[in-house]
Image 1 (cartoon, one colour):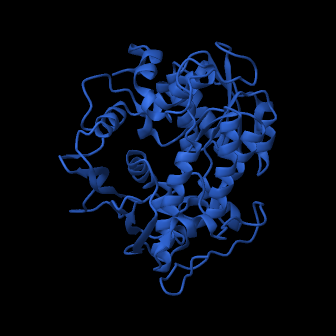
Image 2 (cartoon, rainbow, N blue to C red; image 1 turned 135 degrees about the vertical axis):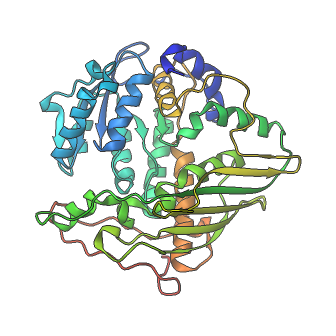
Image 3 (cartoon, one colour; image 1 turned 90 degrees about the vertical axis):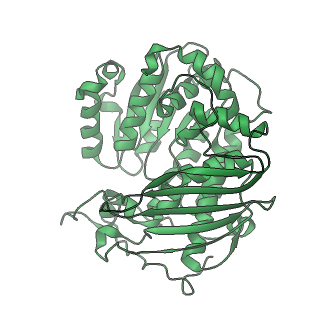
Length: 426
C-alpha cells in the first residue's frame, strides 16, 4: 500500500506510542529555526547507498521538508548518489526537495563539522558505524535533531561516548530516531503490546536469527588507493569501521529482543569463525558466522545466530525472531490486527518529523539502541576471545578500535583474524 494513501499523522498518532518510554511526555521540542509547521531543513553525513535511501525515505514520509546539505569523505560517492536522487524515475515525486547546492556539498574527514555549522534542523548520520559516536556527539553539541543509522559504534569506548551524548540529547529534548526500523513497524508495535498484555504468558526463551549472504562492497583495490581509502571503500570487511556482522546487521534482531524483554543481557558466551571467507584483502578480518548464548537479568536466555554465506544450492536462509512463552509463542510481528502496512523505513522518518514538530510523541531511541549495540559487541568479543563477557566488563572495557590518525593515504595494517585463547578482550 502506498504510504501517501493514508494520513501520515494518523498512522504515527495511532501506532508510535509503543516506541517511546512511558515516562516521556508528548512535548513540542524547539526547532533550531522555529516551531510547529516551520519547514524542516535536513543535512546528510555519509552519502552512500544507505544515506541516499534515508533521504528518499524521509522525503516520502514527510511534508514541508527539504534536504539542503551533504557531507562525505569521497566526492565521487556524494555526486553519484546525488544524481541518483535527482534522476532515478522512482524519485520523481521528491527530487524537487533535494536542494543541495554546490556550496553545501562538503568533502573530507572534517566535512561533518562544516555541515553541522549550516542552518539545518536535523542531520542524518549514515556513514559506516565506526564514525557514529564522534558524529552523534558533534550533532548533539550543535543541538541538531538526529536520524542515526544503526549500529551506534563498533567498540565499548565508542558506545560509552555515544551514551554520554545520548543523555545530553535527552536533556535538550532533541529527537533521535534510529535506523532500527522494526521499532516503527506496525506489526511489531502491536505484537509488542499484546505480549506485554500477557498474550503468550511469561517469556521463557528467546531466539534471534540473521542467516543471510555476504556484504562485499569492492571487488578489487585500485592502485591509487591508500590503506585508509581502501578500508573505507570496502568498509564492511574491517572490524574497526564495520563492527562485524553481528554488530552491523544482526543488531536488528537483537534490538527487537532487548525491546521486547525490556532489558539488555547481563552476560554472554559466544563462538564463531570463518568457514568460507578467503584470506584475500577484500575479505578483511571479520568472521562469517557467530552463535551466542545471552542471559538476561531475569534468567531468560536468548539464543542468537548470524552468518553470511554465499548464495548456493541448499544454503539455508532465515531472518527473524522468536519468543517462547508459558502460554504460546510469537515471531514478534504475528499478533497484530488488520491495518495498513506502511514501509517502516518510511514510518521512522514520519515519526522523526512529527516528534520534532511536536505533532506526535517525543521519540529518542539513542540510549536504547546504544545498549543493543553494546549487547552485540559483547557477543562479538566473546566469540573472538572465547571468554564469557558480562555487561559490567563491556561497560568498563578499554577496547578502542578507532585510528589515531585520519587521511586518505594513512598507513593502516589490518589485524589478523581473532583466535580464541590468543585474542584477549580488554
